[in-house]
Length: 147
Image (cartoon, rainbow, N blue to C red; front, top):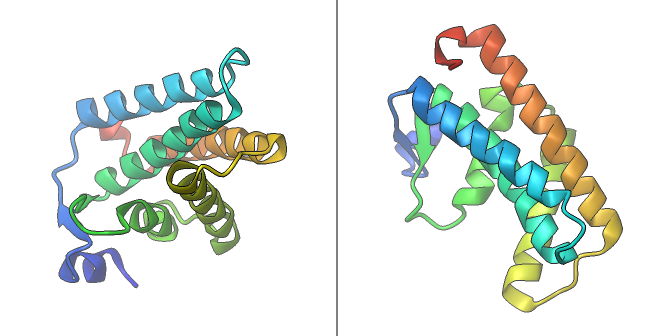
């Protein structure tokens, strides 16, 4: 499915890319990644912070491509993650890992399931990796959006 198809189905909305908006979003992602490393808070809160970094990084890529999710539509987190092959060319295997982290976050948030230390480590490393990839992709493909 293309980004234009997601627009037609109402899962995405058009968005005018703005360097300041993207810079703020990526700075928030960096702060969340740093918070995920704070060992004086719970594993669940650290996982949430790392997951937020993933979402903010993926959203920055989507916005740079001229779209944003319709947050009133169900599944907008899934839409943002699943857009990564179309926005930055992320392989499907990586999307599967990020989507599994999204699912784990949902289970924790909505059913109180614990987050294990291995999942936390994976979420933090995937968040850092995606943030770096989005940053490099922006520099390579949209230098005008790098603040």
